[in-house]
Length: 88
Image (tube, rainbow, N blue to C red; front, side):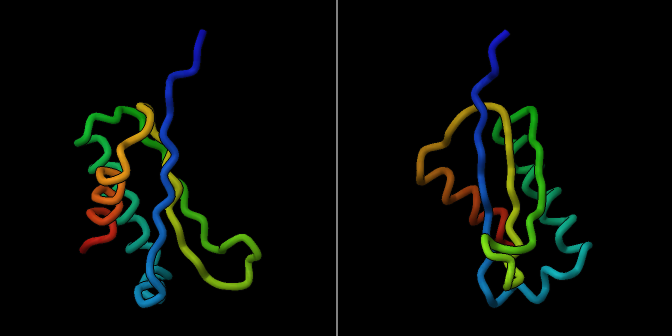
């Protein structure tokens, strides 16, 4: 059995909006939005996980990790997807 191609996407958010991202409801909505948009693009399996701190753990740095079936997107399409998830 072979492993299917997978895509790994990390979505970060600007400093200006990070205070709003302490609300669990906001995080849940963004996670659902990301899953919905990826499924709309044809990805069937979409796994998401929030990380709240960066590499050294000293600053609040929420970022959404996404693992989905399918493989990579061209750079322009990936940027467009990330922007659509970040938008209200």
